[in-house]
Length: 223
Image 1 (cartoon, rainbow, N blue to C red):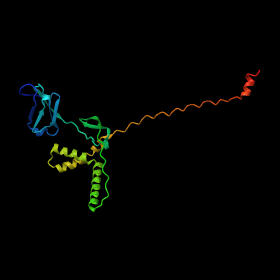
Image 2 (image 1 turned 180 degrees about the horizontal axis):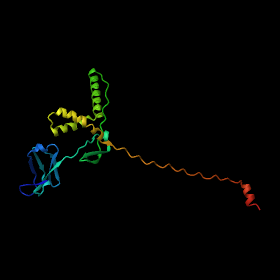
Image 3 (image 1 turned 90 degrees about the vertical axis):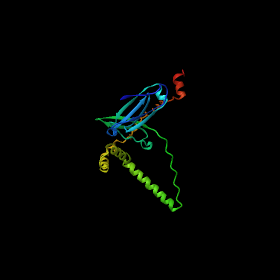
Image 4 (image 1 turned 180 degrees about the vertical axis):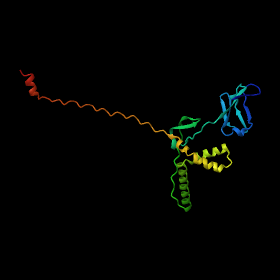
């Protein structure tokens, strides 16, 4: 990290600064630049040139900021579909022979129910309905094989590595990143609720045998 000097009159004023990076291509794959002024921080990938703007409320009377360089050491996929991974989920990111685990709480608005399809009155509407069904099947196929996350990871690797034969690199990467499917965030199983104790039945009152009054009178009172 290093410090930045803000030139100009001290006092509350907005600041705009530009960083031009020499030999930026060497660091473009996994390096990020952070520019921080007070509590305001801006993070971006290393690029040939990038401009950062800070409001007067962040600058205040400061004359110095800080520039830091970070390197990505690991990455993981997190599901952001509340219908698939609602509630609390676990995400693990492996790096440097270790791993860091996260608990992800995912909340989202309830999806708007889709309108019920109206029975087609014209052949064109029938064709539209068939097209929608085909589109839904295609979407289900992509979700079943997790192609979205695998293709995204492979494309990011291509842009990082910039291989001479990107098609062959993509094919190889897709064959290798099947492990992503096993590491996808899964919803935690709800803990079994403790079984409630069965209600204790009240003991039945003992049956009392009543002696006829005439016998009781003769035995205890009549003299």
